[in-house]
Length: 125
Image (cartoon, rainbow, N blue to C red):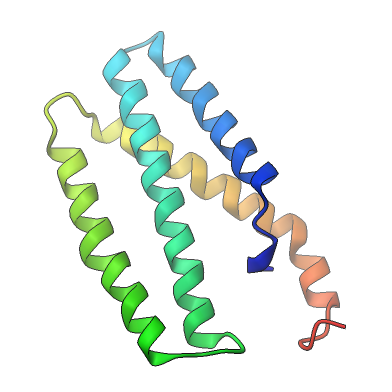
């Protein structure tokens, strides 16, 4: 299921995120920038999380790859979120809206594809 990350789906999430940012631009421009930052940060966070879980629980599990993804995910991404929220022009509300939007889109995609995942045997045939 992780391997199915297609360019089409990435562009769809980006388009929805841009539409949400455009809608919030009418309310407050700094809110729109924060929506984009929160959505982009959560997309990067979810991508790193899937890679971490694949390195840990996947068919080619590797401690070295797990440590590498842990070093990317926790120090790098969380310091970046802290710095994004410290910028005076950013809004925690906008960041949360973008974060939540990407989270709901990801959960919706997973719920839609869950029956296919459960129907596929572990060896993929």
